[in-house]
Image (tube, rainbow, N blue to C red; front, side):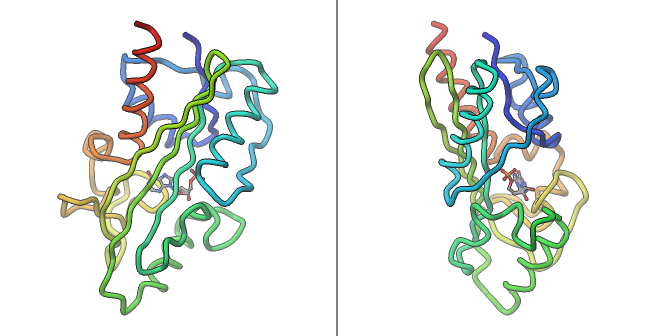
Length: 193
Ligand code: IMP
């Protein structure tokens, strides 16, 4: 089975390779020589991940999967949510995004938040979506240098360390991405059996 992962994000590539291990291998967009931009114009993770997978499928004819992820903060009515990448402006700058979150949460006691990932898989003419969620809280300040995006301010439930203080194995054991990709993996196994 040859599947293309529709992302240009090197952090996501390495996390997903680590999560899937020997279970399933995938091709990257670079592997297949695909360099077009893939926009995320919609207001839901479901629509954005579907649009990404459909764009690559339509242009290459290859079975593929795409994921879209957002950080949803309770006290901010779900912000930044689907707009997580460009919360502080078009440049997609993680440090500025984090600063904006911390600023907006100043004085808030409720720090509850969750990451959510939606994967769209296009395979054998079918479209299937999988979801994964990781609950946690937003810290008062950044800590740790591992991971990417909002990891330095997200403390997953059951831990005292932020994702950015955890090893890749620790993050991948409980993450939103882990849960979504486990669901996809299970589905692919049923297709193969
Ligand atoms: P997208 O799925 O590439 O649109 O990512 C949305 C935003 O969420 C980007 O700013 C990412 O850096 C951030 N993000 C996505 N996944 C994670 C994660 O696992 N940890 C921290 N930030 C993430």
